[in-house]
Amino acid sequence: MTRILLVDDQPAVRQGLRMRLALEADLRVVGEANSATEALVIAQILHPDVVVMDVEMPGIDGIQATEALRVLAPWSTVVVLSIHDDAVIRQRARTAGAAAFVGKHGSQDELLAAIRQAQRLNDPPPFDRGAFHRFSDDEKAGNA
Image (cartoon, rainbow, N blue to C red; front, side):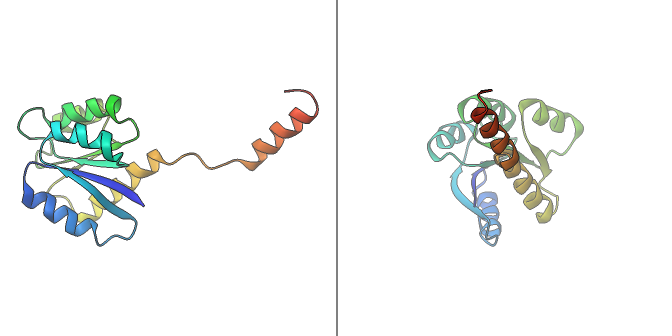
């Protein structure tokens, strides 16, 4: 189950996203923030897997918050969702550490794919049983 924090200063946008994400069995909205500043606090409390972050908000913007989350909530990955879909904003988001950028005018499937891809970045690597056995065999042989 992917735990999501929604961050947008427009309540109607958050409500629409929450309603759409509720239709997905593997996604769960665990919190909402109406500013980037609030998101920084909530992310540290709720430990979301993915933060869906708007760019343009009062106070610090979503790009600055994305950069701050890398330090304050390193367990969370950020998907930037913005009406401002241009190369400069995309580059700023990437530089700040966003896992993905989706324009608000994009398809719902694009957002869902970005959230799931961001979650995969959080997933631990698969357990390599062969490596475990090799380590155990080396340990038994006194090579550890």
